[in-house]
Image (cartoon, rainbow, N blue to C red):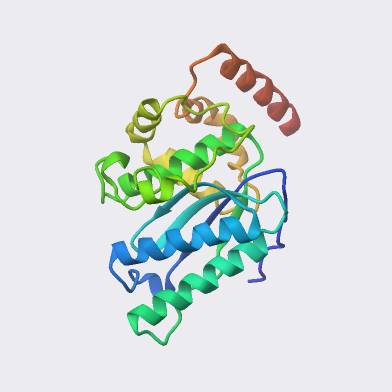
Length: 234
C-alpha cells in the first residue's frame, strides 16, 4: 500500500501514533523507556519548535498530540523516531528494528475533533484495562511531573475542554461505550480526523454527549458547526 501524502501544516494540530515491531512490548522497563521518550520529546520541542499538547506511552506504542508552527512534522518526527529507536536499541542490546512501521498521523481541523482525540488519547490506558483511571496511570503527561513542563495548551482548539484539572480528569475517566471509542480510533487513522458519514449524521447526538460542554458558547458552536456540516452532506 502506498504511503499517504504527507500533510504539513502550521494551522492545525496532529495526532501521532507509532507501534513497536511485531507489536512486542518495549524492550526496556517502562520507567527507562518513559525517560527516553521524555528526554527526546524535550529535545524535539527545542530543536524543531514544536508544541506538545499530550503524550501517552502504552506497552508497545505511543500517542502524541502536537502542533508544528514551522510546518515541519516530517523533520520533527524523523528525529524523534530515529533517536528513540537508537537509544532503546542500545540500552536493550538489540540489533533488530524497534518500530514496526512509520508513524501514523491525523490532522485535526476543529476544536470538536480535538476534544475527541484528546480524550481518546488519555482514555487509552483505561480502555486497555491497565489503569482504573488516568490519575493512576504513571506513563502519561497527565500525571508525570517530569513531563508536564513540556505541555502547552493548543490555543484555539480548547473550546470543548474542561477548565480545571479536576474537571479534566473526571471527563477523561467517565465510562465510555466501545462504539464511540472505536469510531474515534478509526477517525484517527484518516489523514484528516473524520468520522464516517453515517457516524457524523446518525450518531451525532451520542458522540456529542462525550464532549465537555459547560457554557452556552459551546452549545452555540455545536449548533453552528453541525448546521454547516450537515448542509455539506446534502
